[in-house]
Each structure stands twice: as structure tokens, then as C-alpha cells.
Image (tube, rainbow, N blue to C red; front, side, top):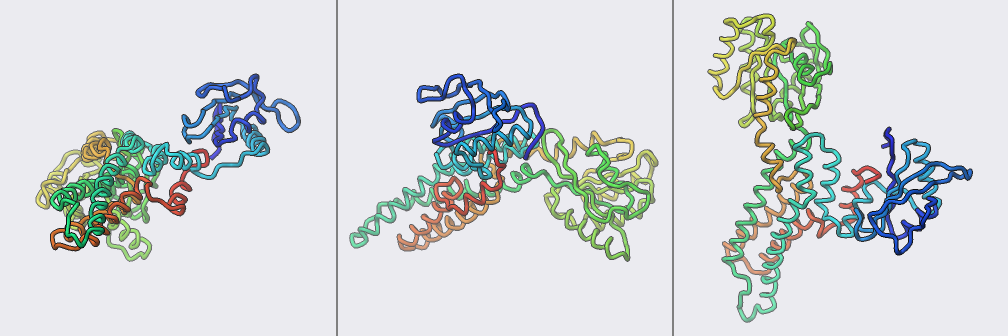
Amino acid sequence: VPGTGAISLIRVSGPETFSIVGKTVRLKRTIDADSAGYTIRYGSICGKDGNTLDEVLVSIFRAPHSYTGEDSAEISCHASQFIVNEVLSLLVEAGARIAEPGEFTKRAFINGKMDLSQAESVADLIASQDAAAHRIAMNQLKGGISNGLRELREKIVEMSSLMELELDFSEEDVEFADRTRLLELVESASGRIDHMVGSFRMGNAIRNGVPVAIAGPANAGKSTLLNALCGEDRAIVSDIAGTTRDSIEEVCVINGIRFRFIDTAGIRDTDETIEKLGIERTYRHMEMADIVLVTVDGSLEPESSERSLSEILTRLNDGQKVAVLVNKSDIYGINKNVIDINNFVSSINDQIVCLNISAKDGVGLPELKKWISDSCRDLNKASEDVTTITNQRHLEALVRARTSLLRVRDGLSSGLPSDLVAQDLREVSYHLGTIVGDISTDEVLGNIFRKFCIGK
């Protein structure tokens, strides 16, 4: 996507790179076989009218020591869209073509500069918007996932080969594959895969943002709270109950973790069809959120808040982090209403946190942000774990591999013939191989790399 800046970088890669660049850029010294990589040349580019278009710098990268593993060059020119378009046109006339989305990274994968899981992490690294997402993408780019899986796959392939070898000597009733060792390998592999599958929930939250639902009765100050947390007027605020009829989502980063705050429709009895649909959507967001902020109006009589709280809290799931926010402390101060609400919440679940806040004046918001951040300490640990997965494709492959491993274990326990056990081992190896790219198809590669930007 074109942007605004001082400099634009135009990348060229392939066996004819230096010939094409030489036809496009006037260099004081041509790029020949003796030209060293990791050097920069100064030159100028003339437009089709013969006049100087721009003065540029050309960075030279020689195969295989480049991002793609091929001869490559990067032309640094001024960031005028006119200049960039003209340079691209001149390069195409000289024999280049415009890259497909993700083609540079795809070539890096094909040329063995990185495996498939590392290539996918490049897109995550570019998209990372907080410290945790950046850290987990860098771990994957360094091979955190692929190194362990490749080692595991090699052991499984070895065992599979030994079991298949037994088939050639079936009449002699010999065993080349030690069943005890194979069972130990299956148990170890299952444990490792279970850990990676279990890490997906946290990994996905790191990648896409932790979902935080702001729920509660109508006119409790939920939209004001969303605006206060995100520092902008994202949601419409009104004294009229039922203003928010659909969900509004905003993203902000707290202590290096990305959160997706979802302001939901206020829960109340209503005959309006649209508002009812909004309330049903509120319950769905609550059920799917990792964190739920239940906001009530502390200036009202406790009975009205207690009815709403009872209805909301009974719909929540185990494992969700929940805080009840007694809002509008700028109106009520500290009074009996607040004490009664706190006591009511404790009687339902003493693990639920109660905080007194004023979303309007910012009272209690620092404490609330700290609680939200502390609720996700495990995410920071997960981002440092090199085996945490964030990719849905990886998750599906691991689940299939685990299923095949369970069949291997059951087959060994029941004395299943070697050829059937070997087939299940081959399936485990296949599914693990699809993650790192040892087994891939043009369709799979196309689906992965078309999500990249043109220049990567």
C-alpha cells in the first residue's frame, strides 16, 4: 500500500537482477561478477523523456546471502508516488515483472532460507502491534516451533521406517522397531503436541488481542468507560438508556499487551426488536470474552443492580476473569449502595473483583488497567514460550497429528499389525511436515502467501 515518507524502497530479486538494474540505473561503475555483496552504489535514473528522474542508492545482495537466497538489489529513491511508478515502469521495460503478494518470502522458503512456519511468522511480525505479539512472532521467525517439530518428526520417521522394514521380513517374525521405545516416543510426542495445542488459546489472544467484554444494564456508563480506556470518543454517550444497540469494538495496548474492548448493548427488558437483537449479541460476546467488565450504576438502589448482576454473572463461564465496576463514584461517593453491591457480588462468587470507579472523571481507572494487565500475566509467559502457536493452520495440523498418535498408541496396546501402525505413524509425520513445509502443495502455498503485502 503506498505511503508517505522521505524514501521508498524498491526490491528486485532473481537471476537477472543486476542486468535489469544496470539497464535502469546509471551507475558510475557497473555491477559485474566481481562486485561484492552488502555494498551500496550511488546512481541516477533517467525518465523516458531523457531527463533525470531521481538520484538513488542501490544496495547489492549476492546469492545466497540475501533475503530470498537469490541475487537481489534494493533501490532507495525519493518517496514521490510519481517517481516510484516511473521506476517500476522502467524496471518492467528492462525485463522485470511486478511481484505477487508475498513472493519475496515465498522465494525465500523455496530457496531454503526459512521453513514454512518461519515464513508465516514474517506476516505476523509485520502485523504485530504490541510487545507480546512482536516477541512471539520473533520466536517463531527464529524457528522456535519448527526446530522442535523437525526433531520430533525425524524420530517418528525413523520408527516408521523400521516398522515398514519389518514387513520385508514378515515370514521371519523379526522386530526392528523396539515397541517399548516406540511407546515412549508416542507418549513424549503426545505430551509435546498437547502442550502446543493448549497454547493456541493464549497465542491467538496475543496475536489478535485479548477480548474484553464491557457488559451491564442500560445507562450504567459502559460507553463512557470504553472511551476512557481507549482515550478517544469512540462510542456515543447519552443519558438516554439503550443508546448502544450494537457492539462497538476498539483496540488499545496496556503494558505491552493488546486488548480488544467490546462495548455491548445495555441489558434491560425491552419490546424493541433491534434492541433485543443487540442484547442477545451482548450475551454472545460475554460468553466468548476472556475478560468481562460488568458495569453497574452505583447511584441507583442496589436492588436494580443486583437483578442485572444475577442475570449476567450466571451466564459467565469458568475460567473467565470478571470484575464488577461500580460506576459513577463522582455522584454517589462511598455509600451504603456500594457496600451492598460488593456484599452481593461476594455472596455469588468471592473470586470476582469489585472496583469503585468513575468512568467520567477517571477515578479508579489506573487500578482497573492494572487489574486487566495482571489478569493476563500468563500471556507474557506464553509469548516467551518458543512453542506457543498462534496460527489456525498449525493448530489443525497438530490436532490431526495427535489423533494419529492416539491410534498408534492404541494399536501398540492391542497388538495391531505392523503395517497398520506404520500407516498411522506416516500420518503423524505427514501432518507435522505440513507445518514446517516439508510437505506442501501449490494450493497451500498460495493461500499462505497471498495474505502478504506486495513488497514482502
